[in-house]
Image (cartoon, rainbow, N blue to C red; front, side, top):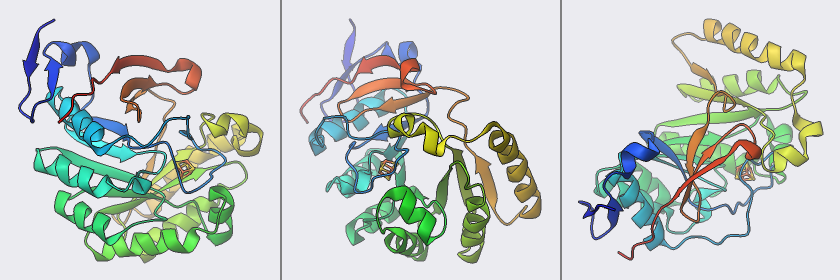
Length: 274
Ligand code: SF4
């Protein structure tokens, strides 16, 4: 196989791989599978692995950039509980990559805020509704820390949006979240219908949207888009529509389908010491 040195440090990669893997411009990069919350519908719960070392994570960023990916969408698990996330975000910026971050917002350190500003990272915070509903969903009293983190990110000039999972019997959470975004001058919100993956598969009976709710959701999105046009960008994410590329904490690249049974293993990013 033709192996050549890339332009980022000493990592090496197979030259012809990019076209074979057909990697997207932005990839979901799981920093860890551990989390400080306990959502009953978690798509990517702990899988028995460990936090990867920072050298491994940086090597993956090198490899992905060398193979055509431009933006690392850092996610988890909960990426903020990896102590070297700020370093990883800054590193990505320094070698020419872009980054996004999805977080539950429970733990946003000053160091992280500094790195997010430096890297101009766009941040998506998971907030699921009012205090009672949010705390029920995440399995702990996290509403105040999460909503306060959102306000801190905004105050620091970081582009911040909200992501909300919509579950059975709680379509009304959409109204509450939209008002929260408007009151805090946010420009974007994404709604994600419940997906039966990870813990969600076990708890499907609790969270799965009924057929009527599945039909109603896009209608409500349309109505709200009309009502809040030019004030709030309201998105409906549908992970069922097409598979997405994910880098797991052990360096595997997986094409994730609507259910785990439809996942396809693509490649193991080689671990090269930096
Ligand atoms: S859904 Fe997100 S915040 Fe909730 S347990 Fe999973 S990783 Fe943590």
